[in-house]
Length: 378
Image (cartoon, rainbow, N blue to C red; front, side):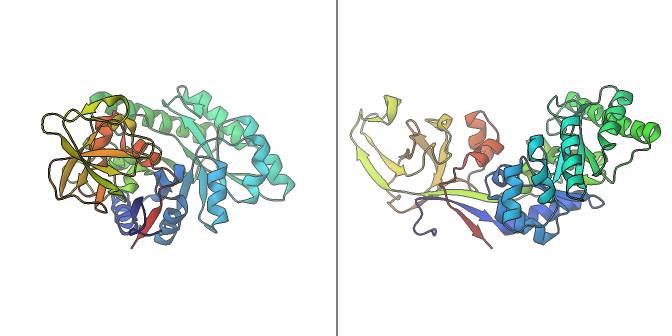
């Protein structure tokens, strides 16, 4: 599949990925770097992105689940891999066999990993997870004395290499004093718990990490031993407030494109697409038909609201987005079949359509369907 033969495709700029990697490393020069490649590298392709990050010298890669880690190991990626989510205890043996680092916050998983590693004459590498205010996974850290006791109990299982400990910020990417206060509250809970681990149980960790994209860009005090950027690695700011006056100049890694399948003229009062939610007025009009729809990842909420870059300018999506196609309103004759439309990229920021759809850039990137080929540039 090439740009000349694809109906719809995503171009992935590995040079932009490298630029973002280096820019983010410069934000935290004294910290290790974990590249988040979960969710198929936010839609960019986990294996090619992981290979590039490994070649660039990333210290760690992060995925959400065992199947994602398995994919990377099958592709002969040897960098350390951390599973951020949970894994069923009955699969602990596979984690040990594949040399995967597992996040742990429950005695059941700690015990399973200990027993699986012991049976193989190995150790299982783990990072303990703290819940400082996300209310998702982790040992609850509102009371640092109690939390430290629970973490120490997890670390006490034999055959475990308790390499790291981490937490996740809920609003480090949002503006305002309230968000800043909550982020600092979470960070304080994390540090207080680690102090108690050290003083009460003699437990120290080689890698402490909590800085997601928002914290990498806005809270240098949280960088600690390792930073963990996700969306920023792919050239999107988690919120405009994260860009700042002297931001790192992140570059979008993905550009989504589609090729005009047809250009059509219609008389006045002709309805367009399902539900007849759009209609040509006096004098009729013209559309370009693009072979991209919600099955490809074009959000249906962009119907009659979003736009694409075509013929040198933004042009409106007309009518409802279909499963495999959408119609674009034209007001000139300079668009022809075969012309390329940019759904998002250099000319049309993904944040624009994300805002119109009432969502975030993360969702639109992850929504780009597997049937859309990824073409890796550079």
